[in-house]
Length: 136
Image 1 (spheres, one colour):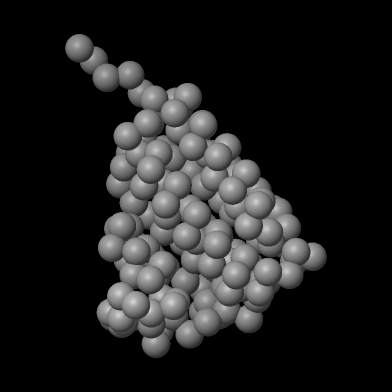
Image 2 (cartoon, helix red, strand yellow):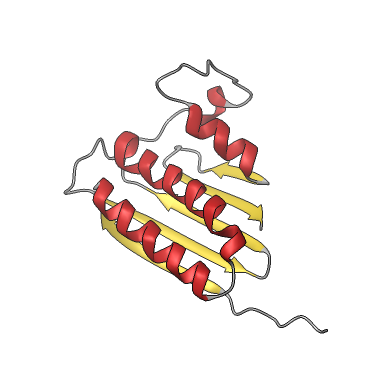
């Protein structure tokens, strides 16, 4: 039986740096994935997306709701691409490369998750824009 080609799923959002906004957006993406027969990918996509957005709200914007984060998400075929940008000062991602850290650490777990779950994780030079790619 021939496979039907799925239409690309795309989002481009800009929203206040609030965790409630992250929740709303993640629910919207989850519903869209389910509606387009991508149910099997929904959990991993939401995990990665939520981690990226939470980092932007908590670390990049320091939970300052008057600041805004931007997110671009596309699922085309079996490829997921997510880019998240915040107006914060960024971080030294070069120093984080290859760090394993402690499982009990308060921060840094999300970066390890991204490196584990995604094919590529790239940052702009400042460290306030992150882009991931993953096959789903």
